[in-house]
Image (tube, rainbow, N blue to C red; front, side, top):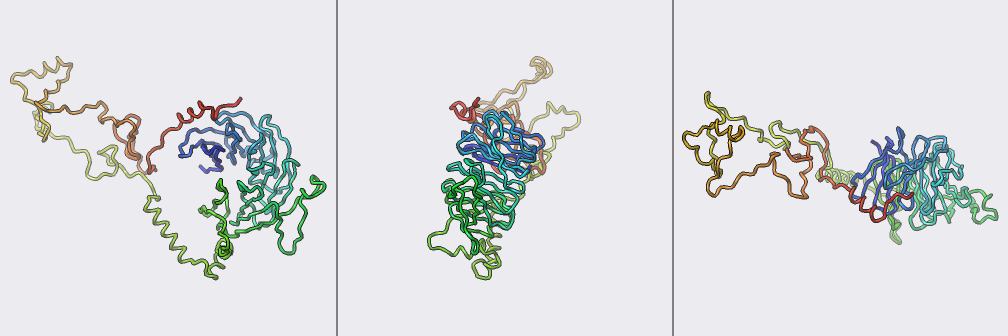
Length: 460
């Protein structure tokens, strides 16, 4: 099922994912799924956001509502209703009890999570909102983008927009704030472009007059929003729409994910290095080929090498091979089918037939003459006793389930279930997908240990 949103907790110890079916899953850093809750019935969850203390989180869905949940117990606390259409995005203030949401009804709303009341409605966009994000350092500004070419920055102290971001030729798909420099805002478009804006520099193109910031106006609440233009452009960052971006916590690397199936990492050039202005990401593939800064043959060779490395690492079709019918639990091993049972001549009782000699395994002394086997079988409850061992012989192990138990702490290898091991299925899964690595341990005990230390406890 398609995943619509993921968000790390502020402690970086937990990850929430939301999918098309309205299900939210808890993950730890080793990507072991700890808990699953159905947040919204028959409605895709479009966004999730943690509270500053990580004790709660909010979900936004296409059923026009948002819901607040207790993280530790996974129980529902309250529902925020007020949007007239699908809620496409949400964010929780980094330090305060304040939630922002964006909807298909073209509005941005601010909510009080304690009472569930809508505090204000911010207008300005003319299409469906795609993302809202609070500035993480000071929390005074709120950036938003919609399915249009312009983005907006709101000041929550004045409850109005103070900056309008222009420059994109296509719709803005996502945005992100720099974690340290509060004036740096990055946006990405459906055409694969990436723009960097500085809120304290207007950067107007030639022929366009500069405008006054509302903060420099004698009446900030009545002054029009200042138009900002990108201070830096990466016009060909990706071949298709960029769906997500995020900065490294130290702010020196920016990661971007696109519909072209590529994740790219960006950083500032070294001082004096201006060669990047001629690469294919800034001027395009054709112009870079003409200037000689990008060679198509080398790029294709590099792509083929990467694909070959993926194949060597087993990153191809991973399917369970068919099992042999005669040997349960060991798939695909040739020549190890179960042998047919030995036949006995007519008139010979198979129970009294002499066993074949095996090297190193004595059959025991012969039965004394005149021994009545039927009487002996009745005396022992219908079963003959085991023959006595020869001098110096070791008894054969006898496990009731047919296989010796595994040592403590050891797990059977993935994809090779062993017959008779408790808790391990022996059913054939012909053609089924398997994991290439061993199963991850359960994290329920670690979650309970964290709760005993005072973390992730329900605050009522």
